[in-house]
Image (cartoon, rainbow, N blue to C red; front, side):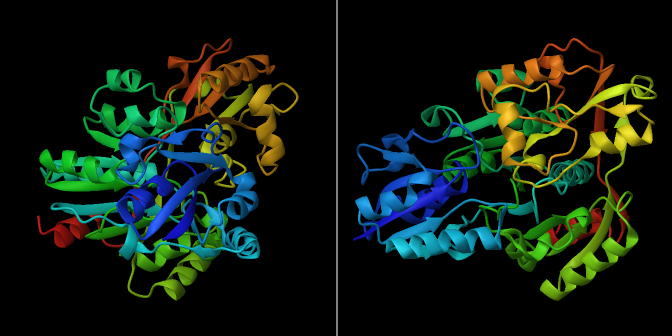
Amino acid sequence: MRRVIIMGAAGRDFHNFNVFLRNNNKFKVVGFTATQIPNIENRKYPKELAGKLYPHGIPIFPETQLTRLIKKYKVDVVIFSYSDISHNYVMHKASEVIAAGADFWLLGLQSSVLKSKRKVISICASRTGAGKSQTTRKVCDVLHSLGVKFSIIRHPMPYGNLKKQVVQKFSTLEDLETHKCTIEEREEYEPHIRNGNTVFAGVDYGLILRQAEKISKVIVWDGGNNDLPFYRSDIHIVVVDPFRIGDESTFHPGEANIRYADVVIINKVNTAPRKKVASLKKNIKNLNKRAIIIEAASPTYVDRPDLIKNKKVIVIEDGPTLTHGGMSFGAGVVAAKRFKAKKIVNPRPYVVGSIKQVYKKYPQIGNIIPALGYGQKQIKELEKSINRIPADSIIMATPVDLRKFLKFNKPAVKVDYELKQKSGPKLELLLKKQLRI
């Protein structure tokens, strides 16, 4: 029996365990390690989810203890199971593991995907923040227009009580309260709910799939970060970002996503230089000659442009896009420039707590504030930070309206963005052909 540690971030790691290791008596999982997301270590993967081979559950350790854990538990294999990581970083971790005496594994699709009885459309990306969310909404709009009954299954974000998050179903806004969703979860689920769609998420994606199949003819996989899908796809759509050219071949598992893709959507062509778009298209073709390439824009829509023009503004952008997504700006900065803000105020001198620490960990972030809220304490720190910043107004470039659970002392503008196809075969025709509908 080989002893195993799974390196993760409360998502792919649990899925890889459930699919490949849970009932596999050739392996003994001695623990998970956790990183990337705050406050997800020092928990247990509960016995109710771990199965009969693990009557006491499985401990979750901080990744910083990895070398010590390998030696302490005489670990034979370490399985790397999280996403949006540079190839360089992955190999540094591989070197650490090998030096400590263990093998270093990456599970491929054959070992980690589940097969659905329904047709599956998967939407993934080369990097966090490329535009998966608006692409998924666009695909859902097409399915609505075709009269197809579908459900969305979202990549996991189980940052709370794992036993209560085994299978989650979101059909109403009240469901967000019932499941005590974080800001990050609300950003992904709420736009779908408002469009009349049902979203499933949780921890056990076999059980989740069975529930979704009961009410669906088609499953839409809404990916997280730049991770691979959890289900075998009938059509695999991957979104890429011309503002991060080169990342498509230097980040894990984004490069694998592009190589696996049936359709690659180059997003943000309305704001990116044409030279970058052309170079990105060439890079994609070098990785995957068979993929259909589509160009698309993500135009912004602002509800109160009068609160931007000639104003000193705070810009709040999607948190993961700025942190492990590596971006220095987003749709909020685009809106501030478009509507001629007087100044984007630097938030750094005014932020507190964990929000302040984020700028030290991710120094590439520009004069903007990431919408981080992985728990009530961090949500309060975000609110306090925003209210301390001297400005005339706030630009919220987040999928969810932060005013629902934060009290601002300044007026706020909401920025929305949707996918608009610019070139290539129409998504509607591609989906009809591939799904035979």
